[in-house]
Length: 277
Image (cartoon, rainbow, N blue to C red; front, side, top):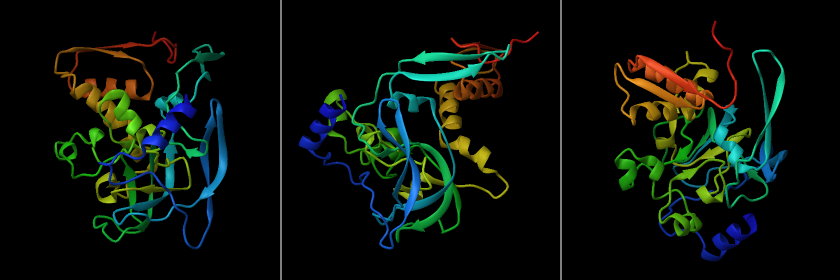
């Protein structure tokens, strides 16, 4: 599948509407960093990669200070084993066949949930300075297209150059960090440094009193769970049902509480949490 999807993308070339691309170049002075990279199904390696430099004038390069693994990262590999503890503290292994995202290439740097300190900025970056602590969106938005102006930036027309995705689905979503060339081929944040296009749009400054461990939730978990609740219209007095009690599911439960739901029902195929007495 990877061979065929990458061959099609190479044959058709980048989508003409994309104005930024996931290419990465090293710094003139050289230097390498540690990064987690995909090399195949169940094959993720710690590698030495080039430290990224500014490519476009609105780019920012971050020195990563916090990153985490998303459940959707499992879709980048197949036949994943993971484990957890039951209330009785027995270790159980679960076999999960998640399928596989197309257009992965060996050496792709993973990770779309990250934050860091601004290390370098392009000359057209006006809202950030070197040293600022920021958290990024998992998607790459241009801030200028019709979808971005409507606050529908996950459908940004300018940041995903995958012709394969448009061929298969008729449309393209935005580019995503660390999530295959099907979504633009951007290097992810499970590395010591990461390039962020359109830094004015995709980086949010974090106040000094907010620790990295809290700010990191803003990269994906908090906004995703928030929109799960808000976009489905949860209101005061409602009963809410949540399928899946991982970090996003638990966060969605909290948002339901804040919206005034009178009862919240959690449903999960895995006994993750102790039963209440």
